[in-house]
Length: 430
Image 1 (cartoon, rainbow, N blue to C red):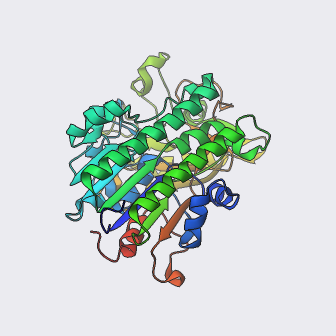
Image 2 (tube, rainbow, N blue to C red):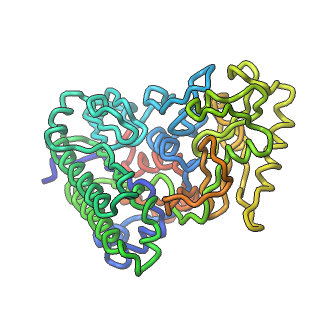
Image 3 (cartoon, helix red, strand yellow):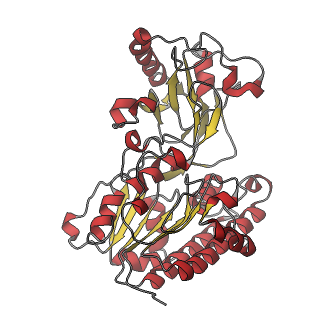
């Protein structure tokens, strides 16, 4: 059933790298995407830096740099404190595309969109959404979703206990999400649909080795799940019709992990971070004299006087400290191999009215190193349970409906995705 001529649709596959999608579609694991690939533009896309879902999806839906939309990760410290808090959609400082015109929008499972905000149509926020009642707008749909058994996210901890239960939950979550799609498509009849699948990211984090190893005991289950994702793509493509512009994209890539690296441990070992012994205090345990600390996704913040309760870094000493820390991280090695590929300063990556809230330094690791921000970790290097980690370079972008293939951007970033989508829709969006 095609309800009407739509302005466009977006399918998000969280964490899916270009190479994996290209490979699985060529090998007929994903035949629907293989057919789509023949009739559209399919290219690698660069993620945000850091390659964090909250940052990238915020850039995708606004078309803006983090310095404009103000999202630098899933967590931050509350102003004037060391108290950590999760990102809120209320903190987004740029307009998402559904607020750029009066079209009807249906947005399902968008990461970093909690609590769900007002929209002409319907919106279900994705992870992190602790309360389904506040994850849905309008709230009247929450009851229907509960009846359907809607799952905001899977319990990834099950991957450590039972891979069988993990796959069961991945498949059930996608089934319930498709149920929600059918329900809300019928009730809202949107001009524009955005549908995000996050089980792909969860699967790759815990079983990236099953993709790379043909003899892995869970390889077939992994391939079967991607076949199920492909069925969802095929359903949506059929539902919107051949004439509707279609974009499919990921927010970052993925690769295997050789070693985890505890960044705050390195700062502590080198004398830049001093913590109280009680681990329950978390960042509240930062002592006077601390010069720098790391938040999630390898964001380094100077412990500045006037910004933090026990700040020790004066404005006059900031530049020298940035140079010291850059040199410190560039020298970090494991078995003679560099750990950090690039150390960026905030103004090398970000621009806009929210620049002052950006991290002071951002670390990009060499391939295989997973940068972790845990506090009170004794070992600098560790081998955790995860087998896959985010990458900046290998996200993907697929577009059906671009008029002139020769003019299609060949090196797009997540910040370009919205403008490409708007051009594909022939100016009917926004």
